[in-house]
Each structure stands twice: as structure tokens, then as C-alpha cells.
Length: 249
Image 1 (cartoon, helix red, strand yellow):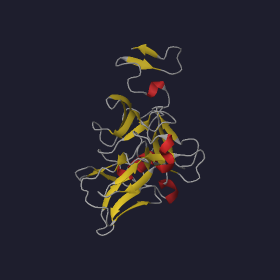
Image 2 (cartoon, rainbow, N blue to C red):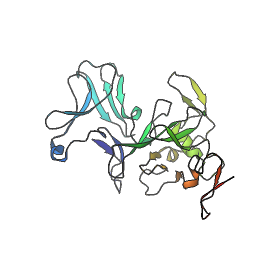
Image 3 (cartoon, rainbow, N blue to C red):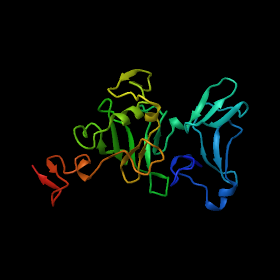
Image 4 (cartoon, rainbow, N blue to C red):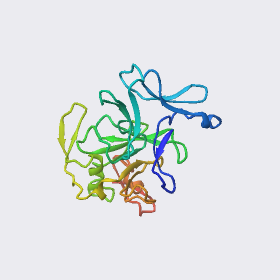
């Protein structure tokens, strides 16, 4: 079960609930996305087997609970009596960062396995824990692949629009402890600038689209093989225009 931009061509999927446990094709017509008796949002197949459920700390009863798909693209499970938001897809993204999501050190984007398989891939994108106000892509959650810190002064430099999107169009961002940290970014001057999206593609690239329905990104990184972290090792230099890309210094 997933969500995509309405009438986008080609279809642009921005979130998949049961990405790591798909329902077999033969059962697709009888798949269910619903709030069950324990109060959790679940994806089940025709036999009642759970393929995904919302990870919420407290669950009691489905009474008084509702799920909504908001125009922003956020899927929200809430308590209609208290108004409390119990779970939302904006805090549990897959490979796509939409306008309205708030990036902090607890949030991670994980690439698709391939262009047609939304299963969790090998690459993650998150805040750089070693460099404040910067972001990092890792391979297999360990190996540093690309860093916004290392890309400063290069064509890969992260643009103000991307920083603005990741900060939810604010000059401040919060961490999980509720503390504020300043970010030197440009605040958008019109609503046209706050509708973009960022995708961590299966091909290891970070793609930013100002227009979510556009076919080509406005910014991408890394732009070539020399833009990758330590492309030529610790003591080498890299030039994509050379016959041999790397050489020793």
C-alpha cells in the first residue's frame, strides 16, 4: 500500500507502507488497509496476515480513531476524542522527503532496492551527526558515500532551496530533545517555493524537484564519480575529465 501524486506522469510514488513485506499479486484485490481492534493501522492480505502496522507506543481500541490522507501527502492516524496524532507517515518516510516533514536526527530516508522494487535498499540519507546543519548519505548504513559538508564549494553544493525544504521552511530546526538549532538558510518568499520534494534514489543520488510532477530534478548529488566521498582514497586526487580518474598526490 502506498501513495503517489495524483495524475503524475509517470506515476511518482512517495511512500510505501509495507515496502519490505508486499502482498502477493494474487491477493492484491483483497488487500486491506484499516484500523484494527487494537487501534493500530494495518495492511493485511486476504487471509488476514499482517504485512505492516503502524508502530505506536500505546494501543488499546479502535474506537474513536480515524485515519486521513491530508492534501500535504501525510497519512495521519489520530484520536478523534482527544485530537492527539498517534502516528503519521511524515515521521516514517520511505525514500521521499515531502514539504511539511521536519528533518531531525531521528529521521532517515532509505532508498528503493531498484526502480521498480520499493523494498528497502542499500542507501540512507539523514542528518550528519558529526557536522551540525549538514546531511550525509551512507551505504549499508555505515560507509560514508556523500556529504553536504564535503560538497561545499563544488557543483554538488546543497542549494538554499534544499536546505529550506529539509528545515520545513524555517530558520530553526529541532532535535529529539526539543532543543532549537539555528540554520543559515534562505526562507522562501512565496508558496511556489515550498512544494518541492527530495528523493534518495536507488542509484545513490539525491534528487530535488521544485515541481513534484517534473520529470527532471532541479538539483542532484553526487553529480559524478569524483563527487563521492574519498573517491580516490585518502591521499589521491580525482578528476572526471582525466583518462584515469584518480591519481596519487
